Length: 448
Image 1 (cartoon, rainbow, N blue to C red):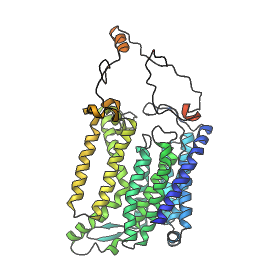
Image 2 (image 1 turned 120 degrees about the vertical axis):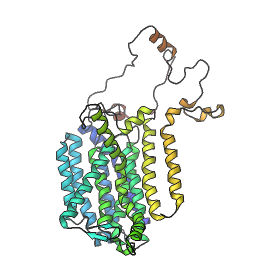
Image 3 (image 1 turned 90 degrees about the vertical axis):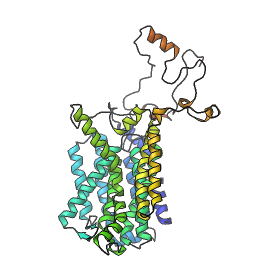
Image 4 (image 1 turned 60 degrees about the vertical axis):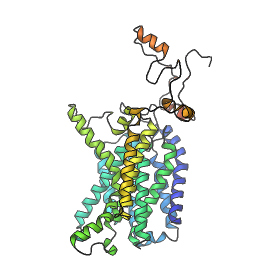
């Protein structure tokens, strides 16, 4: 565990320290796309954050190769080299897309080629566990097709969920943390050496996300772009392929007995194998809802809009940061709930805790609909929207007296504030210095 933590910390440190220079490089090269109608950020923000994440991946693999307890992963398996080869290819395509906007079909082809490169070097699914039948071997073509499909699906799921500041990196970090606990248990408790590469990949993936998050949390100073989202999606898929298709679960002796007994015994062990795919749960639900919504409105299913789940959270009344935290909560509940169930599947307390936490999550999700008011003694400890209205102060949602007077007089001209124009290719305040996190709430006519 100490060596894994050291690898995680080195990966996080390299990613964190390189993100600042990468941001300046992105601004200098003009890797700052224009704001689209469906975007939630208000200023052009540099991309190419995947450059720092890729060098963090390289640093993590280099450190692990020189540690005594992790050196065996590189000597007994070619999977780390396969991961690095596929990651370098997908990262290069992502960097070009962040700068020049590559066509979607070209990116899809690059994803399939990157998966094929990993397959050629041994990182592929050799067999799949089937309750009651044991480990079922796959042919070369079956394993290749299944591996490529898993890589492409995971990469695009991560790319699809990257819609708010810090959302994709945080959700992938949560999934990687839960997957690390599961694979480390297989490696340490059961002595399955084949689970060591997946454990290493999960630790490095956590370091990449942890090092990048301080720069990517709202308000984000840099985006990971496709060079980052496709990269962490590939690493996430590589861990799932390694432990699913390479680890022989027959050593756990879970397939003994009748078919019903073997199925009941093996089910908790199989469920965590899908942990890297738990990140797809929210994007997949969002995708289905988007197709239904656009078709119902007579639009093309591929038409862009502002009806995604994170947009709905903002419309309900959640702030940007709270919307991200809510999606973190549900991702952690799914991922760690699955791991806990795999360890103690016979315990009813785990299901009870999951149900209670789900109820808490629903309450937090609908909290802006209720808008509770804090008692008088807690007024100074809660945000302004939860405080009681003072005498002469407009309530939440009401117009201030000058604005109300204009509305009653029939004035329809909106009140706008003058802003200093920002030169093209410069990211406003974020390109020149620290961005203010507090909006200007000074009243008109004050001496300030």
